[in-house]
Length: 110
Image (cartoon, rainbow, N blue to C red; front, side, top):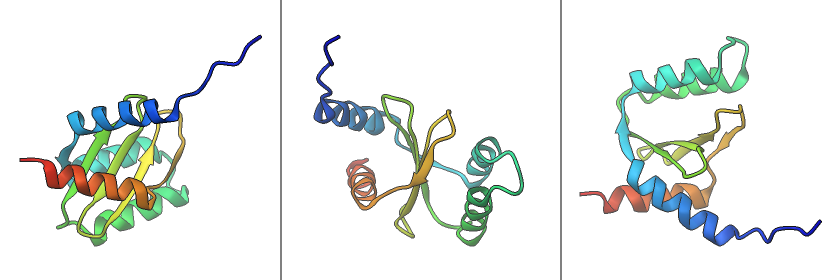
C-alpha cells in the first residue's frame, strides 16, 4: 500500500482561509458555553484554568475562529493568549505562531 504524500503547506493554507472567513469577536458568555461543553467535569484542570482566565479577563476582547478541519481557536488579544480545541477532545495552548496569525487576521479586519 502506497503512502499518500501529506502536504502540510496546503493544509495550513486551507486552515488560514477558513479562519479568516470565520473569525469573529466572541462574548465571555459564549465562551462560557463553549467551556461547559469542552470541560464537562468540574475536576478538569483545563476547565478550571479556562474559567479562571475568563473571570480574570471578563472585560477583554476575545476572538473565535474555525479551521477547515474543525479546529476551534479562541484568542484573547489583550493578553496575547489562546487555546485550540477539537470536538474529539484534543486541546492545547495556542503557540506563538498561532497567536501571531490571529493578531494579523484581527488587524486586517475592517
